[in-house]
Each structure stands twice: as C-alpha cells, then as structure tokens.
Length: 525
Image 1 (cartoon, one colour):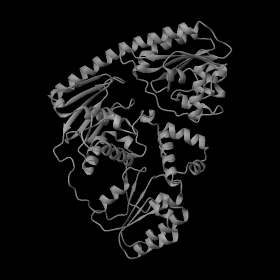
Image 2: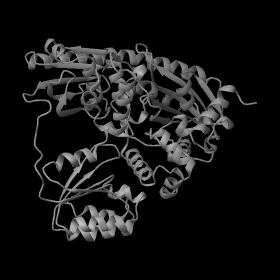
Image 3: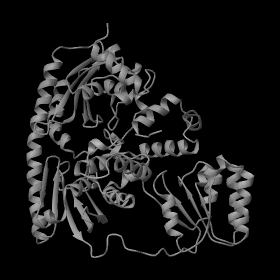
Image 4: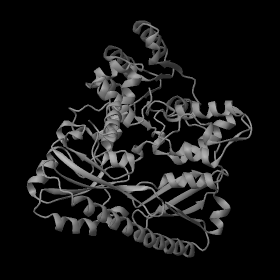
C-alpha cells in the first residue's frame, strides 16, 4: 500500500507530463552562485557531515529555494559516480515537475521532513536510492530557503540518519539567521556610505525583508517603484548593473545604478534624475538601409515598424495572411508593389515556407525601393529565412517583457491612458504584474490591462482583479538553454497556428513532453 503523501506526489508528477521512464538529464541546469547566503550558512555544516559520513555509502545533497542542487558531498567515490550517473549534479532542477517523487522535490513541495524509499520514487532510475529530506525554513521570513537531503542505496537504511539530518538542518537555519543579520548590517553600512558619498542624492537599499531610503529617495519613489526596482536586482549571480532610462510612477525619468555589496543580502540603488521629458516627441528618421525588426510574438514588432516608417508611406504585407490567401496571389501583390519602386514592409516572414521565402528573397534582392521585414527569431532553422533576413543592413531586436520588467509600470500607464480609463492599479496589483513572466509579452500585458480596465472602470484595480498573473514562474532567472527552449517552443507554436501536435512533431518531441515544457516555462496556448 503506497503512502498517501507518496501517491499524491506521483499524481502531481504525472500531471506535469513526467513519465517514470524519463531521466534527470532533461531537467534544466543553471549556474550556481557559490557566494549565496544559503551556501555561506551551510558550508561548515556540510563539511562536518562529510567528515562524519566519510567512507560510508551515504551522500549529502543541498538544494536552494528553487529546489535546485547547489552542493553535493559523498562518502565514497563509487557512490559519487552512481549519483552523477543518474544526472544529479550541481545546478540540476529537482522540482517534482523535473524529478518526480523524491525527498528533495517532495519535501520542497510539502515543506515538511520526508523519507522516500526505493520503489516510492517516481522515476525508475532513482528507485535504487532511498533518501531523507528536511526543509530549511528561514527563522525570520518563514520562507523555505532550501532542502537538506541524505541519500543512500535502498539497501543501506539507517535510523540514525534522521537525527543527524534534523540537527544539521537546524544548525543551518541558525547560521542563516546569523548570516541575515550580518548581511543586513553590511547592507546598512553600504547604504549609509552611498548616501554620504552622494550628499543626500536618492539612495535606496532593498533586501528580502528590508527597505531603506534616504529623504530624497522617499520623496521620489513610491511602492510601485519599489517593486520595479526589486525586479531589476533579483539576479543572484550579477553583482551590479545600470539602467540608463527608467520611468518612475510619478512620470520622472531616472538613471539607476545598483550594486550588491553582499551576495544574497540585498542591493544598494543609486538614482539620478534625468532632465528631459518622459516621452519625448521624437520624429522617426527614415533609415536608408533595409531594416528588420525581430522579437518574440507580442513584443511590439508591428508598433516598432509603424514608428520607424512614420516618415514613409509603405505598402504593408503580412505573411500571416498566407493562411487565407494563396501563396501565388500574395506574392503577386508583393511583386507589384516592389516593381512599382515603392517602400514595402513585410511582417512575420518566419511564417513563410521555403519556396515563398525564396521567391520573396528574389523580389527584395532586386528591389529599387526601400523595404523592412519583421520576424520572430534571428536564428531561424530555415536557411531561406536566414537568407531573407541577411538582406537587411539594420536590425532592431526587441527584448521579451520578462527581461525588462522594470518597464511594466510605464507601459501600463500608457495603456490606461490610451484606453481613457480612470481607474488605476494599486501597488499590490502592479507588483503582481511585475512578477509575472508574460510569455505573450506586451500583447498579453495589453489584454490583461484592457480586461482589468473593463471590469473596473473607476477606482482601484487590485491584485484580485487580475486574471493572468498567478504563481510566479520559477524561471525568472532562465538559463540560456531554458531561454532558447522557450523561444523555440513559442516560435514554433506561432508558426503552427497554435497546433500542439504539429508543434511537437516539428520540434521532434512527444506531445507529453511539449505540455510538460510549456508548463515549466509558463508558455500559454
């Protein structure tokens, strides 16, 4: 009889698209910050555990607040090779969606100590192990900071492991408290130093449970700005950064510089007011060279093209129209426009098939007039698409919204002004918008803002009025591999008109794997 906790974990694993035959190799890998607060607190305890278990068939695994492995210690080299062989390496994601039922993933899910023995594991390759997991809960914030785990051969269980694990976890939690107090004290000193050096110019310090600002900063930034500033600085690996232009909730345009004086303990932010309008009425200067605008679906390619061609009167064509018209008729219309020597804009060239892209290349290569293209990716797998884009001397690449969350408040204000809405988003609602990953980019954000304004025409729009922003995707810090995977799926879904069977076939994966990846990467469709 399977324990209820285990049975429910199996159900969660199966519903995420994971299959028992899958391996850990498909779970994402990410660089680990060796200077993190968790590792600083855990390292002495892990050293002690490693000495105690030396020569035995046991290993200690530490996962962080994202259920990602950040350290492994082994009693023997043989056990290390076995554990590495199943894919349990530093940086590997160990959520239930990625690794199924085990004492890291399921402990992380339940926030309670748990043993998982042999056949209770969901993934077949892990049934050779048994393991104990203990959640690491921060004494102050009460948030989970990670999971401490002891893993061993399913044949070598030892009841003494539980008290060793519990005592070690409690020691790490105590050191976390000390590290937090020490880190916040150093953050406070860095804040004071920056304020003195800048002679009262705006300075803000932000940590998990700490917000410091000098008088000039308090007069300049509000709760919405705090959320936007946090979004700039949540990369655990980078130590500093600069944003040349950020519009505050008041409409003031500023330059922001931030630095992390202590890894994992918050950031000090310096703010300089810029002396020019928030949205200058700049006139688009027409480019004399062919131009392409690239970006994920919804990033604003059409809007950007319209702005860049404002001084021209081009003929517009959209490859998406090939769904409702024949390629021959569509190409004839393009040929007539090009032959007349006028300016031409062709949108969504990634939606053309090989023969159409080839013919479009021939037409534009000999064009006497100016032209511009848009597409959803620079690194198309289709050689004809790459040839087509190579005709463009200038390229504008639009970043996905998840990479520029700090712009969301300003975008929302502009959208509300366009709608003529009299309601406004509360700080809590704006924070929810900033925290969401927006796989549909600006287009999805616009739909959310429009829907919220329709539901509440006046007064406050709170987080309870929102539909799309829910639990935050753990991929806020996507690896390059994850980002590339996400881009490939989003672009292929768009190319296939949302048909998941065709998308899976085109990507060479099963529909189950596609659904699983879409859930992991917060891709709607």
